[in-house]
Length: 277
Ligand code: C2E
Ligand code: CA
Ligand code: CA
Ligand code: CA
Image (tube, rainbow, N blue to C red; front, top):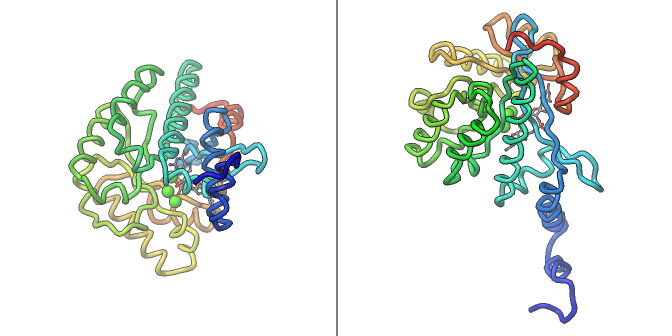
């Protein structure tokens, strides 16, 4: 029952713990903040063995009016509990395709990888929506990589295959994010149209000094080689980590050693020539 003349939100809050209250506020603020234009598209470069930028990963930020610039860990978990993660995904994909289209018009081909949440990927109209977005912006599908996690592969496997295949026909590449941190078997790798494995930064950080992490990284590099997949190593922070990787395989590197995530415009202004993409 609602108190007469009372504020409904204050009423709900009375029975909540502090964490639940923060989440409740964040969800409501995010629901208003997305259409109000508070999300920001950041890009982090991906670099090949010659040090050339070959693409970027899109990483979302939230410019909150009171709390400042928020990182995904402050709001993605809240968003994932509701349809808000779909709204974020729609915003990020739209913004990314429009950016690729603008750069294409300036004669600069650009490849961008976008994180796709399972909830969004499994939405009824995801595939036709992406097809329409690519057509409307006029970009080449191969400018777009979708980063998905092993969690996507857990159920409705036939449906996942069908969706991935349809998106692959548009030229889109698939990358398995945080590869090796999930619990799934590896058999999905040969059944899905996957192009790339992304080694989680957790493995990369200690690889030069920890034999177990080194062995895991080497195993992932071997799996990729045997299956003909490219590799992106995430979270490369030091010359030692880069050297460790370079001594073992040709991989694309991403991490603070090469560049931090920054607003899309900042990277594109600085990178006058992106010829190799
Ligand atoms: P992720 O996909 O594993 O992204 C890599 C994270 O590592 C990013 O954190 C990036 O800023 C960070 N990173 C990059 N290089 C380094 C490094 O050298 N050292 C360290 N310590 N960290 C590095 P970020 O931007 O905070 O994003 C966190 C997670 O949030 C992402 O993890 C991804 O799962 C999720 N996320 C980010 N943007 C989106 C989005 O647009 N949609 C969805 N669904 N999830 C997103
Ligand atoms: Ca990612
Ligand atoms: Ca991830
Ligand atoms: Ca990761």
